[in-house]
Image (cartoon, one colour):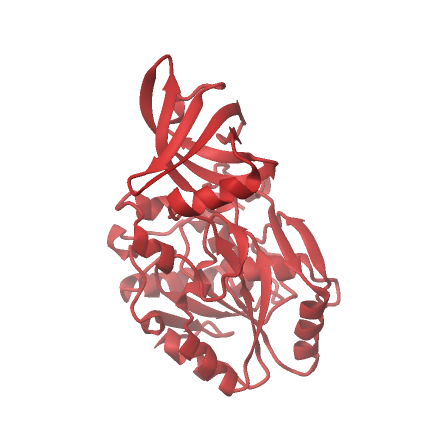
Length: 362
């Protein structure tokens, strides 16, 4: 399939720069198995669920890995910013550097904030083909993480940072209520919509919550640069599903409940751990699963997810789950109706119809 087949028009003013307040007031577009559309709000999600359903959420916690500082060489300082992407052993991290053209292997980097005397020091150890740099930090891992929490900022996606810089409010806004296991460099954004009161309401209605962990990585930031989806390689992300979680998910489905993935990260992890019979197995490994139209999704029945970028792997995923033509129509409706897109935007609730064969859906 051509990547261009997953393009659509999106006015710039549809990109949300802040989340809705209160969170439950964000809009929710219900897309049922027949492709029918219903406009609602997040607080209404219980209308579309029933007792025995199980919400599967991602409990990863976003690290404040956006750093600002200087490149030091030959007695001169040049401003530089880094987005740490993945720890690769000890105190070495992969990172995006900006402006990369002014950075060389061997350069010393010094990161700090305007609000603290704490600093982070690193040396540029190498550059990879995909534009990532290897940074060796001059701090043991525990000290590095402690300093990150003091001077680091939330790694907002480029489509937000191109319009405004991250701030202290984002340290609250860009973290889900489920966040517990540190390790992500981007939020599992469907989870941003949930509050304690909404969870209490759902649980009182007989809807259970199960937590699994997928640490969101570099793939969130990287555009698809190939023309054909067959040529795209996903970045690997580490995920964990315990035996106890797998047992509860399987038991809910066996009892007739529906598995409702909150976010594409939860779905990708469940699908990575799903066997041929649709049963979830324990999982603790990296996954680079890439779900496109024509792939049957066995692990869930419903997906709650935000509205994604044109030509992105996540838009391809929702097309695989609910049908390409259905999702293109749903996104047209969302654009025309003023829904807010991307990380801080509104959401949709989709029914899994991927077992209905479509060669490409285009």
